[in-house]
Structures are given as C-alpha cells and as structure tokens.
Amino acid sequence: MAIRARIFLISAICAVLCFFPASAPTQTRHRITRQIDDNVRVTLRGNRHPLARPEFDTGRTAPESRMERMVLVLKPDPAQQNALEALLDAQQDPDSRFYHQWLTPERFGELFGISDTDLQQVVQWLEDKGFTVEPVPAGRNSVLFSGTAAQLESAFHAEIHVYNTRGQIHHANATDPEIPEALGEIAGGASLCTTFTLSPCTRWRYHRRRILHRNTPQAPAIIWRRPILRRSTTSGLCTTALRMAAGKP
Image (cartoon, rainbow, N blue to C red; front, side, top):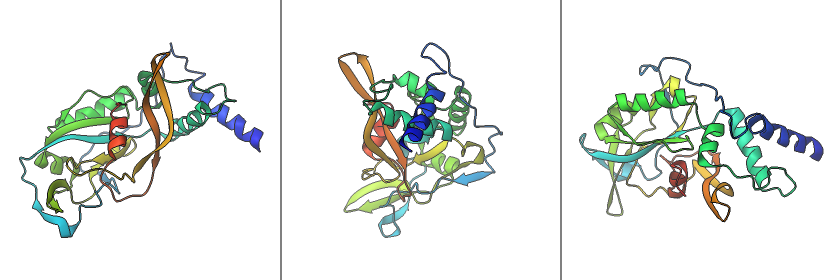
C-alpha cells in the first residue's frame, strides 16, 4: 500500500513539474468558458464574518463609504490542487526527489494559478464594476481591489452594514456575496469586510507545511502555506492568510 501511495505521489507531481521544466511555458486550462452574465449568479457561501450578526447591526453603510483592499480568492482546479498537495508533502519528505525543491512565486503562479485569459476576465469584470484593481500577485491566487460600498453591493449583491462590537465600528457584508456563475469555477471566496479583525480564520487555514522560494541560496522566504477549505461563517481570511494570498511573506 505504501509503495502504491508513493507511486501516486510521484506521478501527481511529475504531471505538473516534470513535463513543464522551468524554462518552458505552462499551459493552464481555461475555466471561464461562458460569457460572464450578471443575471446568472451563484452564492459564495460561508463568506460572512462571525461578528456580522443582527445584534451588532446598526444599519446600512453609507453608499459613498470607501472600502479598501478587498480580496477575491482564486482557487486552483482539482488537478492543480492534487498536485500542490502532493508537492507540499514531497518537499518535506527527505526520501523524495522533490525534497526542498522550492518554487519562485512566478513559477508557483504558472503551475497552480489560474490562466492569463481567466485572470484578465476577472480583472475586467471588477474594473467594469468601477473597482480599482491592484497589480496581481505573481502567485495568481488572488485579486485585491478597492471601491465604495455602493459598488460592492451592486457587484456582489450583498448589503454592506455597520456593526458595533464592544464600542468598535466595523463595516462588513450582511449576507453571503454572489458572483456571476461563469466565475464560480475559479472563485474560492471573497473578503468584503475591511475593518474587522479577520482572525481566527476558519474558511482558509494555512498548515505549517509550506512552499518556500529562495532569493539567494542563503535567504529563503515564505510565499505559500497550504490552504485547506473548511465550512465556515466567516467573510474572509485571517491576517496571515491575506498576506499569503497577496504574495507577501
């Protein structure tokens, strides 16, 4: 059984790494295969902060209120996720040929990020809604954007409310956000609240095992920790997860 598992592990990694050497471009599958229709939507469930509750709700956020650095998380497809899980295990296995074989952020994006075409469509959709979109991190697993409460409500069909918890004022979505169904294949979640402390994080937990990259042989830096999707009622990511999703150590 152990031998069979090891063969599967190596096969999964080789499917991504061995057939795509560092010098060769990687062809990532396009997953947005339909026109983005705002009238056909899916709900991103489990994307509300646990403190965004009726007893703390003081009413609707002013439409002109600015909401800064929100996050749309971009998930790998099942094949990429399986290969990533296998690589994470192999990088920590001294008996593996991939032991401590680190990836650069750019290479990580090529192997496990969404395709350039899909990414362009996501950015274009956000910009069409009036948001300001930041440069996309090299890992291509998130998009950071800013806008007003009115733009948020229009784009994600989720009301933004003001919450008073222990005398502190916060703004967050009162319901789970919605996105066009065409984006459902690549969207893993959305953090639409920018003032709550986003910890503990229960939607995306990051395991201690990690992929590292080296700017120099002597200076490793963390670029990714393993994401594990869990059922949750939070609206976003914990602080560490947000930094990792943004490609920041």
